[in-house]
Image (cartoon, rainbow, N blue to C red; front, side):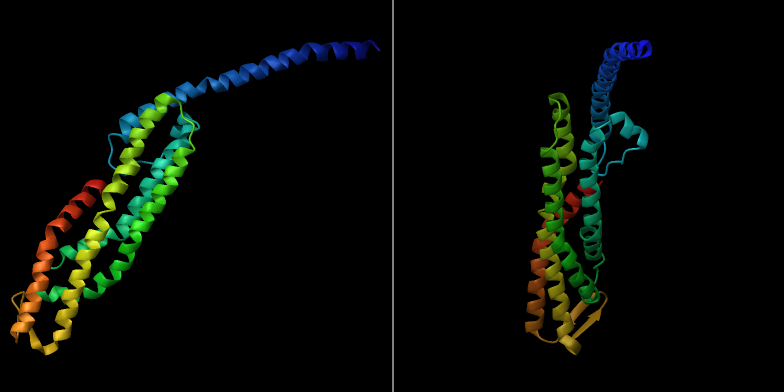
Length: 239
């Protein structure tokens, strides 16, 4: 009986001690949040805001340092990686193909590859919109203190909103130019032996052929500045 009484007494004494330990442990964990928040804010300001669109993934040490805020960063880097992958698979290759056209014969030799690239290019807009919608929804679900939210929103605009909005208009501009290039290639191909090439130029046998070709060339020249602007935009975004 004595043993039982002592055991119950010890249990009553131990219960508040354990409760106190739990409180201390919870408080200690809670104390990490301000430190994690500060580290994350510093990283956004000094790394993300000073970098290009492509931002680095976090090391395991950084993930520990940022705590739950590593998930907030994952939204940014996830969009950045998706955008880079999509643009590098469609828009950049087709711009490179355009820049490789130097002679009249190039319109014919590049025609098939340009035609094929239009499919991937037309999908790019959907890919950007889908990636941005996913990122927007993820950001909306975040619960951030006001001081972090202000900095995070700036980083979000830089990595997500601004690049997406800048790239979207370049897609139809580039696609329209590519379609015109393909049209020239189709026209030259259709002329058969009624056309000859020399010194990078082209000669036709009839005035009608010449007029039609010159009209297509004038159309390309009229769109060339828009294409150059699109190229500069892509280069600026992808730096």
